[in-house]
Length: 376
Image (spheres, one colour):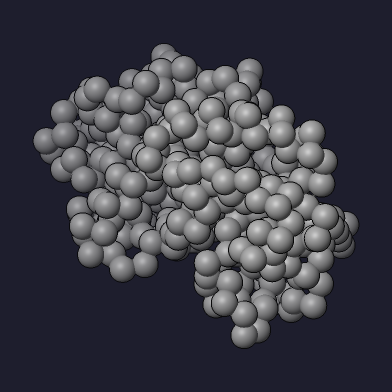
């Protein structure tokens, strides 16, 4: 499909949908984004860590994860060139910590290799003793040692999503604050395209449809007669406030486990997150989930014990259950003009912009990054 006069519907405005829409609109495609702001969007809940080199993942998943981190400078430059002032991103470093020197040493070898391979975007790796740790992250437990990766960054999911959507709009994309209640293949209602998308108030025709509905992508495709392996996973986070403390330069903290600590400006520190399977789209905060988040954080950073809890967020991650946990990004087999971008799991804020841009290129028949293994 060529971009001239092409019309594409993007279903979903999380990091996947926003990134695809931006990639298409910036290439002169007419884009319409549909989203009814249903509770539980993973991107809206996320406090993202852009430091893929500290991940315990490997294989194709890690290669995609790392490529996403390498793509970030390009994305940020594109948004800044559009004059978007707030991107929600800061490169304050990533801190890998553990009480067991052997566990840390094993991780250090892998991390150093990855940082070296990543080049300038990842920065440098420095060994830190307990005194050094306390200098750059004061709440840390006194019996920890760690590594500091200078290129690590953090991003607020809501702010980045909004910045990317603003960028898409700057290139002409339109946003519809309603669900795509019907998606129909075949000749368009007005004979102007092979797809029709209907909301409560209108029906529009398109040349292609991109399903980027997060954890709800599977149910959207089910309605169209296609099946993928994407399941919902609930994640609960807690936002803490440290009044009068300058948390802006603090790094993200990674204890080589499922949880993390992400400091932001203004004394805000985000801790999380749970990984709860089998609860569907239940977006409640629970006593057990909040206890787990607090216990995990205070075990490695007891200095946060007197912080004020001022917000909780809950998101539903789209988890791919296929081999290696690889996300989906590509054309839906057997159907012309239907595309999918979903299943990013906990890595969406890192991988989403790269995959979204690559999928936009693929839709237009342009050379895309080496993410062929992500296809359907």
